[in-house]
Amino acid sequence: MSTTQPYIPRSGDHAMATERFQSSKRAELRIWWREIDRVLLFLILGLMAIGTAAVFAASPASADRLSTDEVQLPELYFYWAHLRWQIISLGVLIAASMLSQENARRIGVLIAAGMIFCLLLVPLIGYEVNGAKRWLNFGMRFQPSEFLKPGFAIALAWILSWRLKDPHLPVLTVVTLIMGMVAALMMMQPNLGATLLFCGVWFVLVLLSGVPIKRLAMLIGGAMALLTATYFLYDNARNRIDAFLGGGTAFDQVDLAQRTLLAGGWTGSGIWLGVRKNNLPEAHTDYIFSVIGEEFGLIACAIIVALYLAIIVRVLMRLANEDNLFTLLAGAGLVTQIGGQAFINILVNLQLFPSKGMTLPLVSYGGSSTIAVCLTVGLLLAITRRNPYLKRQSPGLRTILADQVPSFGGNDRERNSP
Image 1 (cartoon, rainbow, N blue to C red):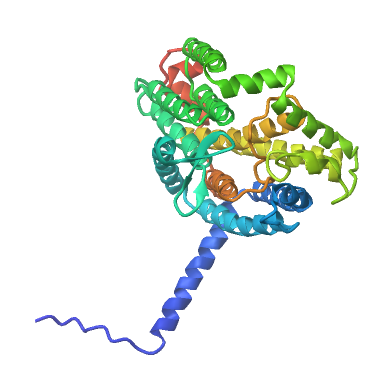
Image 2: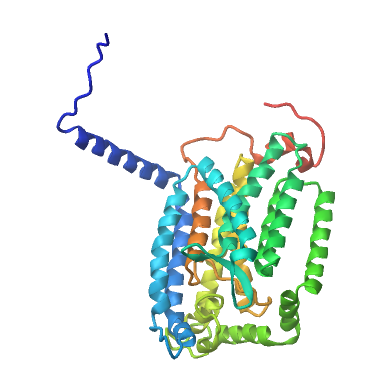
């Protein structure tokens, strides 16, 4: 016969359990605040604050342009919508940044698999906007390619990190096949700008993973051949490139964006005092950098560029002494996504790149795209979390790669483990 006494709830037990739960949550928050890269977090929040002011400035122009005889949009329609999306996105950012590195990796791989499946559905059940079929609607309209961006970088980093376990694994073949499949699905939409961005992330990760130079040169040659073929096979890509080089409708938009950008001079014309922004086709999204230039001045534009550069440099500094290959590759891939998209958008506004329909991350107005960018940033913060009290006992990432992946170190001589 058992002598175990049955549990009898007593008054005060529930309060004690609640107190312990709250104490545990406070402890988790303290750990998160201690390990998070606070400098990077504040840089990101600063860009988001600038984006809020920029959407406030651009909202009247976009609302007037998109209003019809049946529907008149209020002047601040996009501003209030942007605030709502930003609140949701901040919650996603903080939640993602509190993940452990292992959970961030798992979620990233699951996102990549799920969004590739969604890309397969786009030609079947997606709907077309402005001549491109890129969107799905499952109760909320979204572009699978936007959410694929963080998952793509993390999944490729995870696969390439297998090289440390076995240098003979065909990881390069696997990631190249994934890249080819994603590029094919993106060009079916078509979406050349996002395809180039994914190719850039793939190239950075392959380069950092220690691929032999000969194989890398072959891959670059193949990529250039595919890009050339894209020009001849896809009318959309050819028209945009020809328009950029020789004039045309798309070029006129880029030219208008540049004129708007320079219209405010160094200090800007003042908020809501800009005139040229009223003619921009997407003042609150693709060409918001030009609106900032007109109303806040070129100095404000320079500050935004400096903030993006600071984010990139901060992440690279955080990764410089990293002794985990996955962390290095995932962090580099995610910051390449953010920085690459930002500078493509800025180059378009400066008339240095053909129009790509790509927003300025953390600044442009967006619904699901804002959530996707904040998810990317949150996963980046999670992957770069570090306990400041733990000292490294390893010799560093480059030595590890030289020991275990001979092609990275530049020779094949064996080294003894410490």
